[in-house]
Image (cartoon, rainbow over all chains, first blue to last red; front, side, top):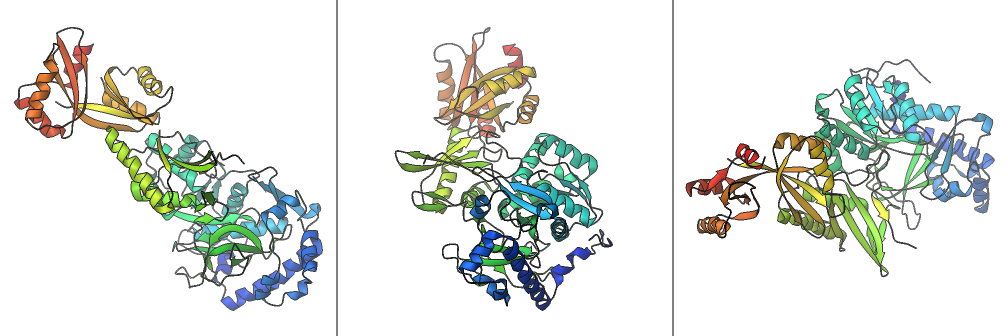
Length: 444
Length: 145
C-alpha cells in the first residue's frame, strides 16, 4: 500500500491519486467489476441483503451493467439500527480489525466495521482527499477531528500518514491549546468541522493571535454542511484556503469525496464509492445534473458493504470535466440534508436558509440557533442570533433596527414569521464537533 | 475634550449586569458613572471608567462585545433650572441628543451631564462656543475620586 512517496511541495501528485485521473472507460470497467464482486459478497454473507434480493427474484448474476444497479434495493439508516450491532457484517470477526460508531440521534449508535483491506482503502481515499486539498509530504497537519468512535479523527490521521505528511493528533477541543500548537508547531493544515474552526478563529482574536501570520494555509473542513459565505469569512479571517470534504461513517467515514483547487464541487472517489442521485420521494434514479438525494454503493468494502445506501444528503452530479484534470465525477456541495428539514406550520425550512439570510444582513455569519416550540398547538420558530462587534451599537434604536432587518430577511426567505432574539456573544453553546443548529422543544 | 464611553450588550435576565461590573472590579478599573438602557429583550450597559483602554481589554478578553463611542461631559449648576438652561441652549442651536445621563457631585454644587450627541464633533463645537463647562477625562476622574 505505501508505495514510494514522491509527492512534495513542488506539486507532484501522490501515486495514490492515480485513480482520480483514470480514463472514463477504464473507470467504468473497474466499477462494474467491483460492483459485481461486492454484490456477490453481500449476497453470500449478509442475511438481510440476500432475502431482499430473493424477494425481488434477483441474484448477483443479474448485475450485467452499471445501470443494473437500479434494480437493487436501497439500504437505509434504519437497517443499521435494526441489525445492531453486527447484523450487516460480511466478514467474520476474526477478519475485522476495527469498529467505529456514530452517535445516532436516538438511542443506539450505528456500528461500522473494517477489515485490514478496508482500513487500507480508507487510508488511500483520505490520502487522495488531502492531495485534492493541495497537501503534500512535508505539510504539517493538525488533526482536530475527534479521535475515538467518530470516524473523523482516525480517518484523517491514517490519510495524512499515507500521504507522508506530518500529523499532530491533537483531537478535538481545548481551543487555547489548539492555537498554541498552531503557532508553536507551525501546522500548514488544520482538519476540523467548519463550525469548530469559526470558534477557533473567534478565540484566536480574543487571544490577540493573528492566524493570517501563521504558516497555516489550508483548512480541511467536513462532517457538516457549510455555506460559501462561511467559506469567504473563514478564508479572510484566517488567511487560508478552505476545502470541503465529504464522507459518512456508514460508507467509510471521511474520504468519500473532496474539493480540489477549483472549488467547484467535490470529486467522488468513485472507483470505491459509486454515486447515484434519486428522487427522495419516489426513489427513482435521476439523470446527472438533476438535484436529488445522494445514494452510494461501496464497491470495495469487505467488512460491511453498503449497497445503494441512502445518505439523506441533497446534491447533484456534475459531469463536466474539471479544471484540475481529475476524471472522477463531482457532486455539488451539500447545502442541506433531506432530514435536516424542519417543518413549521406546513412550511419546509432548512437551517441553511436561515444562514443565507443572516449573511445578507450582516455580511458575516454570526453564531445562531433555531429553537422550535409549540404554543397552543401552533409551531413557533425563534432564531437566536449572537450580537457581533460589527452590528453592536450603544444606541437602542440601532440594535432594534438590526433585529428587524434580520427578522425581515429570514421571513423573506422562509415565507413565515419568526421571532428573532439578539443574545449575548458566546451565549450559544460552541460545538467541539458538529454544530447543533436546531433545538426542537415541540413535544410529541 | 470628548470622553470615551464603553457599551456592553446584556441579555435581559438575572446576573447579566453583575458579570461585567465584577470583571472590571477584579482588574481594579473604577467606574465613574454608568447608565443602563433596557428593552423587553436586552439591555445596553454604558460605562464611563477611569481607564477605558484597559477596561475594553478586560471586557473583550472575557468575551463581551464592546462598543466605543464619544460622549461629552458638561458640568452644570446643581440647582433647579441648571439642566434646563443647557438643554434650551442646545435646542436653540439645533443640536440633536441621542441620550444623556447625569449625576450630582458630592462636593461643589455641580452636576455632570454625560451626553451622547448624534454628531459629537459639531455638537462639541457648539458647546464650547456657548461657553458651557466641558469636563474632560482627567478632570472627571479628579472630581469623582
